[in-house]
Image 1 (spheres, rainbow, N blue to C red):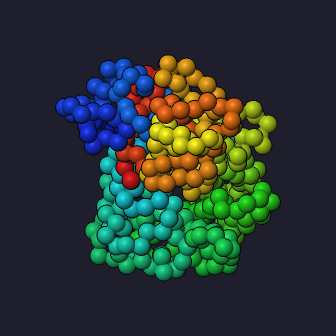
Image 2 (image 1 turned 60 degrees about the horizontal axis):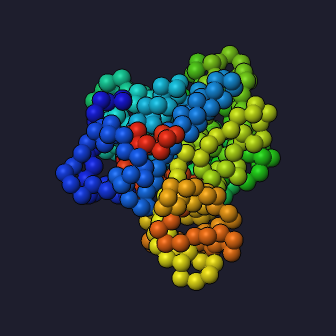
Image 3 (image 1 turned 90 degrees about the horizontal axis):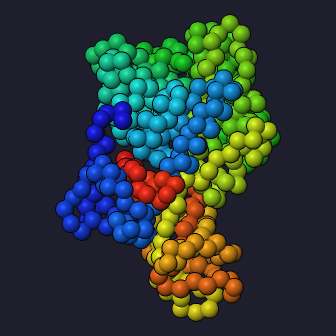
Length: 414
């Protein structure tokens, strides 16, 4: 752990998915007890993470970054699980990326040594706190996409003791995207303001291509980011080391193609990839979009999250109601995917073409083909689509080994 035992919790009646009606038990003791997933220590529904898939995905992405000469700053907002931050850093991650000031505070509390804030920070109180932490040796970078954003940093720190300047990356956006300068000319204007502003240090350029829908559009956008970096360098606005950051989990192959290599003469270029959803992958949104399906290396990611839920009713032919709903499963980027059935005997059967058609708060409507037997009490294992909105529904998540024994507990900090 980054901070030993800071992540220690007790499990009791407050822990969703765990069946602990008696005295509280520490998660360390719970994991050490060797509970079987189907032995009564959890109840349904429950989200679990597969230990082997987590380890595989972390190693696979670390190897990809190493092959392409990238630094890796995985987006921690996917999970907000400090023990996974620890595993990602141990595998060679250069930093952890977060999206908000509160997430930055969590990362700092757990001892993450370097953080990227992939967003604009405008509130003076967190900015002053960050400057104080930088004075103590912490490393962090934030994004800016306007002169007003640069001025907000300088204004917040004008009377702040200490000498640290806040490092910034100027963000290039694209039409109809979210944040980011909409043109290279606007980016140059913001970069000039950052280079001249007190208590601000310009470290490079950042981009986010995840909102684009085709490889050609992504390539064109990243080429513009590269042009922007070269323009800033030609104007003498960049230092010896230049950071260029990009990369969600859907297009990192194009990032490698467009931003990889030594294309900034006379300076040390650090390309930082920020993919986050890779750590658990999924069985829907990212399974359909993974760049590893397009790459020749033969690597793959594995869906590490499984939602186990119980059939509570089969009120009419072809329909089963499962005790799981919007409070438990992500649904913003696709509905859960049935993977297999577990009978009361312990026997496992394939999902056999079953399909989720809709979710209520606590009910899942499951279309069941006529040749599939499914009855009340059967358990269904679902894969999820879009891990980012799965983790924020669960505060504690059991980790299971290949023998279905619970070996650890993950805790989220949203």
